[in-house]
Structure formats: C-alpha cells, structure tokens
Length: 312
Image (tube, rainbow, N blue to C red; front, side):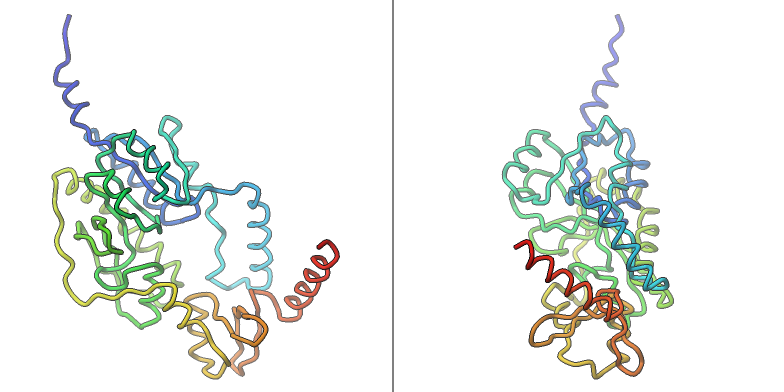
C-alpha cells in the first residue's frame, strides 16, 4: 500500500481563509470573482460571510423604487440598481455561508472560532472589526477604496472628488483596532475621471484592484508584514458628511449642483422636516425631491399621511 505523505502534508499546510463581503455591494461582487479565481492550492476557502443579509421580501420594492427614480431621472448616474443577491450567486455550493449584520456579536464570533481560520479577507465590507473578532485570525486583510493614509472611512471616492483631488486609489492593508490604519500590503494611485460618476470611478478602482489580488495573496502567504502608512492622514465619517451636505438655504447653486452630482443628494433643513434634494435648476428652483418632481413628492406625502391616519 502506498501512502501519499507529501499530499497529506500539503493539506495540513493549507491556510484556512474566510471571505467577508456585502451582497448589496457591487465592489464585493467584482472583487470576489477574481479573488476566488486566484485562490491557489496553498489556501482553503472554508467560509464566506455576508455582512448584509439579503431581505427577499424587499426585492420587488427595490426594483419598483429604482424604476420610478429612473423614470423621472433617466440620465442620473447616481441612480443604480441594488446589487441584491448577485454576490451570493457566485458562492460555490460546497462553501459554508454565514450571514450576520453584526460581525462583533459574540455568538457569531464563537462560530468563527470553531472554524479555526488563519486569515480573513474583507472586500466591500463596511464594518468595524473590534478586538474579539480580530483575535480570531492571524491576519485580516482589508480592501479600502483610497490611497491610504488619505481618506480613511467610508465613501472615500466621493470625498476625493469633493475636494478636487487629481487622483484617488486603493489599498490592501492589514486590519488593526483603528479605522483603516493598519500596515499596507499593496496600493496603487489612479487618476480620477471627473466625466464619470463617483460610482463609476469606484468600479474602475475595483477592477484595477482585482488585477493585483494574486500579488496580495502571495504576499500574505509569504508572511509579508506590510509597511507603515506614511504621509498626511485624513478621515471623513458620518458627521463630516452631514455637515457637507446640509443647507439652511439654497444660496450657492453651483456648489449644491456639484455636490448632488457627486453624492446624489443634499439636504435642506427646514423648520418642520429635512428635505432631500436631488436636482436643482440654475436659478435655484428645486426640480427633484427624493428623485421625484416636487408636486409628485408632496402628493405622495399627503397620501401617505392620510393612509397612516386612517389605519393608525
């Protein structure tokens, strides 16, 4: 009888990895396709974690809202169809799928510990990993959509475009307990194309990043410790975004139009409510509220009020 000792050793040496993604993210889908293709025989993908479980009951509503928005705004590049379930369709049947909206939940962490993984790869996963989940892995690798250390935090592409940056970029880095502050594994600068929307620039970055996933896997496997982030640091979060996009009156029309072009919406703060404006004419007249003509918006608002009053 012949024993394949070398084969057994090879299996033992395989590094067990878990992929974290978001089934509503086009970026997760784009990167996962190439990530899965580049996993070699030195890695074993033991599980995939979806950090934004898909709610099937809302699928019809999602398509309906998208169609209504496009009906009134056919050329608005900020209106995109939710990527619902596309990421999930790429998962092989033999791979364990875990779903959670709270990756720091202790019950979820216990499930991860049982799997005894070596590495985690986060791609399009906008979650903050805290100490307990970090300690489940030897290393956690994150894809971030900026050339770190600039524009840490969410929506880095939109922030870079807001501040007229010449280039943006992407970074694969190790996770630590600070937001987007870990050592860099691989990064690349990319010129911003201002004729394209923030989302289109985002996809271009993801495609560029996917071309170097094999390099990242090789560096991680070879225990590359990464390099410290050097240069001017910047971070933008929810507070900064709210301040940027909130207005008491519409007095700087060009600025507001530009912000809408990048972010899709600004909010007008009135006494009674926050009005989400998605289109403004050159003379300052509001053309769209939540992507609807103002008259349509207010008719639907009144109808909703009467409906709620009747069935309350």
